[in-house]
Image (cartoon, rainbow, N blue to C red; front, side):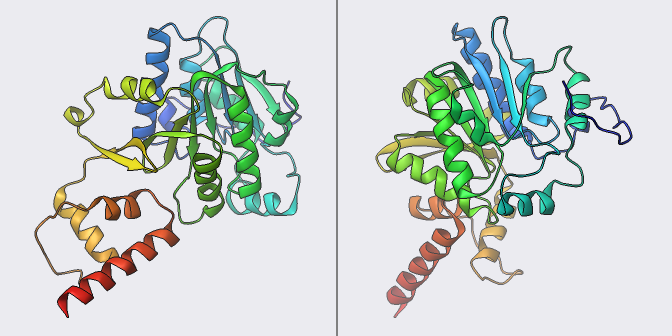
Length: 303
């Protein structure tokens, strides 16, 4: 049941695109593809979203809920945050727009029944209210603070069954170093296997990464205008997926980031593996370090 909300009723969205949020087409396509592949293979399991904002991704997850499955959403919505840092984060980004009433209005515009809603900090999920090995897909998009994200990852690890998939938002954004730290810590110390990286989200599994990757590569993404690249990280293979930008625009952006003249032009060159990882995968501090090393190497060669 919803908490009391005396504010004016929020507008009802006509399409999911009318719902505010940061759930872009690449990730909408990936969510739908992976969830459909699970269903086609007869994989069943619950869905869990930690951090829902106004429901843009929850609406899509609800589209893929099958009979007998449960969809759980955990978010503070308009509830007070449990600590000062989390409260400051909410005030800066969400406080003026995020309410449970708005989420429910948006979700009900496309689904007859609401998901199971837990209006609380995501840390409460560590008490076992989401059964172990019960989920096939978990989406983490709550706090950007390291301690919270690290806890959410542990919840996801316990909740996921078999080859279940976790998706983590903002794993590489400049303003979310806490997410970067928690994600890569999970990869290097908790056995999380990266499968796919998009500009916004990290996808991984504690199960058979090759099986998940095979599902991913069963679609010809390049034929649909996406760029799909293979990467090797700490002995593991994963892929990067993004819209295939025009080569000139992409090169100009890289050139500008490297300190070149905005008006200068040079032939498009294939980036080395180290440069691609630095620019497209690693946190900004690591990116800058690799760029400095590359620049120093070029300077030594020229001298």
